[in-house]
Amino acid sequence: MLREFNRKKIFFVAFIALLMLGIITFIVWLWQYIAYPQKYKEYVVRYANEYGVPEYIVYSVIKVESGFDKGAVSKKGACGLMQLMPETYEWLLEIMPLENVSGKNEVKERDIFNEEENIKCGTYYLSILYKKYGSWELAFCAYNAGTGNVDKWLKEKPFYIRFSETQKYVNKLKVVTSKYKSLYYK
Image (cartoon, rainbow, N blue to C red; front, side, top):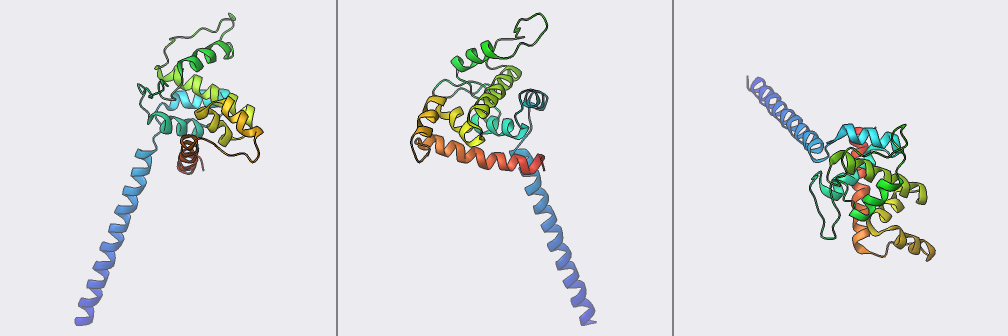
């Protein structure tokens, strides 16, 4: 009878341990999807495909730049989800491919804080930077520090990121990009 009681007790403890492990695993799984959301998916998918930028790169830049806050403004004046500088935004609107057969680059709403417009321009800018530098690490450097700085750094051997803020930014983007890739793009 004592052995029967011990077996039941062991079974009960094992059951509770497995139940707790399951609950903890679920909470961790759920937290990851909350911490790494796919907000604005319609726009991210559309413009990532249109400009040849992986979706997880766009989501990562949005998360690191603004934390998905469409009204974000940095101390330096970068605006919106993808934290575009107003001058960069205006330049991108001028050079972006034409969108309709009338030959005009008509923009529904010229507003740097408009989610679609910001994601469209930011994604296009990422595509330009990737084409120029051939790596996401260098594209991230240029997104943060500017192409002039990255061009200068590339001329100096050995190459290294000379701004600690940019180094931290690139490192953070690498981690976030890896997380988005593993969660959604296996």
